[in-house]
Length: 297
Ligand SMILES: [Zn+2]
Image (cartoon, rainbow, N blue to C red; front, top):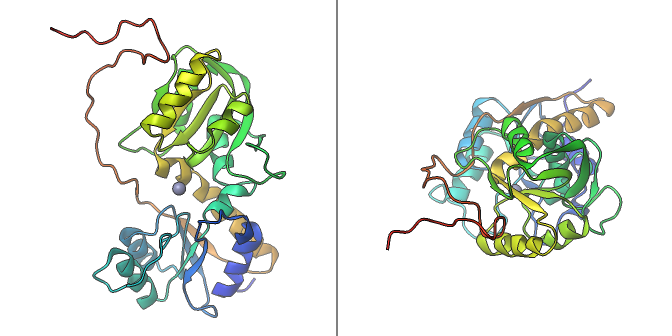
């Protein structure tokens, strides 16, 4: 077994997660790094931020592999006084490359949504929507047996790393679920596919008021489902790091290369703490005849 170069690692990563499968707006690929640099150790992280760049350097990695691209919206200036520039300089000055595997890694089997399916307790699933076999963002599959919405949420709460926001759930605690649709990261563009899949519940992240409210209003006319479980974006994708690292290690090993992979120990969810505003009554879309808020007039 020999030590691969950065080019060797990028080739394996792109065979596992072909860049052609990335969404058109995405920026997956090698952000910086010298192709002939030997790579002995790789740090996997969700985000390329100043702390994970320092973590990669301090743990003597020659490559930081992140899920999210650093320069998604383009950048014209990268001095160290700029947040993106600080990341790039920390990495380049310390001989560490940066590779982003984003929606291309979401799409492939064993990607982010498959990891989230695993956290739900589901090992067999198919892509949401009319995607080609084994590719496409989002997955749908069935639990071995029907459980309550609250039980599924508890199962996820145990599997996900702790984050300040926890989980938000739309639907009755005792509602039953068997068919589960998931999308790691922000999934509110997939509601039509989720409804078409006849899923009982949709597990995703970053759900905004209007898409969530409209989805629940439509569910009200259709037996009450799909229910919604809204996770931390970071936590829903952090699950993939371990399986992504193993896939890359195995792919390189099959080519005669050996690397060590580390998983970031940092929480890059942007939120730090939560203050409860009190116990809310069930929402009007879940309990249309509910008691509502008690208001003193
Ligand atoms: Zn994401």
